[in-house]
Image (tube, rainbow, N blue to C red):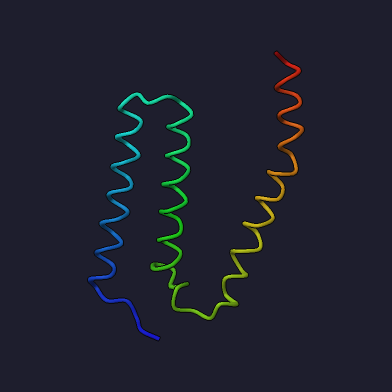
Length: 95
């Protein structure tokens, strides 16, 4: 198991900075709202993954440690997916 170096942290910082610039650029460019939301969610997930892997050192921990954040995230996704049909039903009938 290797530990991250200063170069690794600077590389991750560069990626985080680049993703943040992308987010701001997409919003200021006046893209359609659906595209903006999609890009913002994708970049937020990418940034969260980079932070979890390198700054929280999950990449270098035992794989069982992934269960700690993994189970709540999986439950959150399951809850959203479980409620999605109800949301669509109410939105369709509201029109």
